[in-house]
Amino acid sequence: MRTLVLGGQYGDEGKGKILSHIAIKDNPRVVARGGVGPNAGHQIFWNGQKYSMRLIPCGFVNEKARLLIGAGVLVNPEVFIREITLVGAEKRAGIDFRATAILQKHIDEDSKSENSAKIGTTKTGCGPAMTDKVTRTAKSVSEIPELAPYMTDVVKEVNDTKDVLIEGTQGFMLSLLYGTYPFVTSKDTSASTIAADVGLGPKSIDEVIMVTKSYTTRVGNGPLPDEMPVDEAMKMGYQEYGSVTGRPRRTSKDLHFDNLRLAARINSATQIAITKIDVRFPGNNGVKKLENLTQTARDFIRNVEKELATPVTLIGTGPDVHDIIDLRD
Ligand code: IMP
Ligand code: MG
Image 1: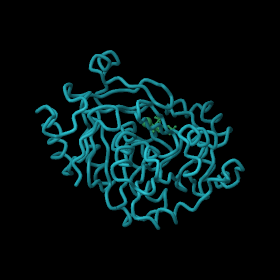
Image 2 (image 1 turned 45 degrees about the horizontal axis):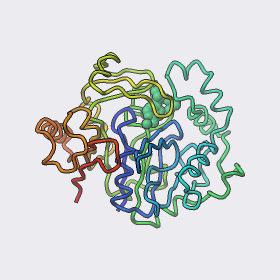
Image 3 (image 1 turned 180 degrees about the horizontal axis):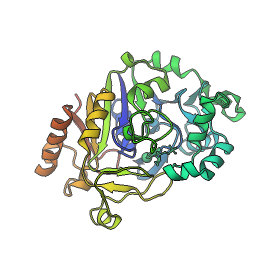
């Protein structure tokens, strides 16, 4: 089975938690990451420790899984080396030799540019590296000596393996094609692109799990319907801070079903994962069975299924990898 997990909102939907759970439960041989690059931050609470991973797949929590970064992903060599060292994954991590490297000049430009400031980018150099890629002046990861031990053909690895977990990053509303342009990231973030990032065709994906938080957050500039003031978000326990930039995230209480329906359609979502149900509906922390959720939480989930005409199969009930209800077969 090849399962692709991606975000249905503005990033930070809680993909890290869903991905790490699936990596343990489904025990895939290979976990491959697509998406833009180290502008993403996936948070994982694992063995009493908090990890914030910007490049290596969240599937690192399964010690037997091979950890791959697809050709479409921008790689900051320093971030990659730091992360594999942190989790001791030197022997099982690989990068597609076709991937593009982020250099210091890209980070400098992203930090200084007026347009980056207007968009509120993560200043991780992703946009400028994508520009170099499009103008065909970018440097390949295969030209970076420190990365030599990790070069591999991800296309071959993911196509030759049946059990693969594919990790998307960012969120649908940040897509260069379908998001709130120009307040978007530098690439499409939909399922087809994530699959292409790791070298899989659309027919090679069995399940697409679209993740949505129980409310909506956004970090950086651009429209956010029904945005609430920070003090209100604090009071409700919704206030969050960016895992890459530390910036306070902007909050909107409800789900934006028009956007989510478009996302479900363009991503061919076959399942929905809902995270932070315990934050939106107190009294549900750590619940592991659907029947133990409060009635309001269950009604909310049924409504999401109805609005998106897609089954909700995973429900996050707390920060730990194991705080989850898994309704998949
Ligand atoms: P960039 O991707 O760093 O160029 O930033 C463009 C916009 O996308 C900014 O609003 C960022 O905050 C947002 N963004 C990029 N990656 C992520 C992510 O993984 N989570 C949340 N927001 C993101
Ligand atoms: Mg994030």
